[in-house]
Length: 292
Image (cartoon, rainbow, N blue to C red; front, side, top):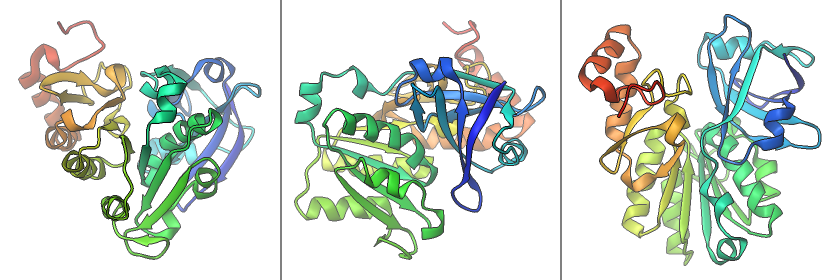
């Protein structure tokens, strides 16, 4: 059992929890994720690691209530425990494998949409701890849905907050903020965008036009977290990949977002899942050993 040592409600339906999971905390890296289950009959939920404390042995997760399983998680209190807390899973951010000298030469921009601020934060914090300053754009629909602003401000080189309705910070989409920054003379060598699929799609269209290499995290399309369900099958550069076992981070300019979002809709029904399995054959699964 994995005890919840801290619970905080960030917005009306977004929660933060620190969970005691010493083995995960000892080895996880920015960009990786965990799979949690509230109880032995609960649904498996993949969640990107928001933060970790190796000394305390805790891992921080942030989740939004979108269904029965996450609603059950939201009802857990400090002192309660998760039945399963499996990880770290997925590949770490490519940043952790680069030399510090090369990282310090790069002008890096992070773009976080909605709950995407949670997986962006540990990467910006990791860079900050190594003396690398990165700019961050955080976007949300309204001020009430904005999360981790103070935490992000403490580790970002420059933080730009924007809301779709203009209720706080800049007004408009994150893409507009990037356009404004470039118009003001800002230049970037790398963009890392994490958030809803539609946001990442349009951010990648813009950064491709601007000539900025872009990395995206496809955690939003993961379901099982092992490649066996086929939910996160995606085409990247013409090749079949699975977000949970090959990612979750990919070259955003090579991701077929339209196909991925279309599959998300089809996957929601049992009939749709059966059709995908039939039409995709042995490329439907990524971690079951059936694929070439």
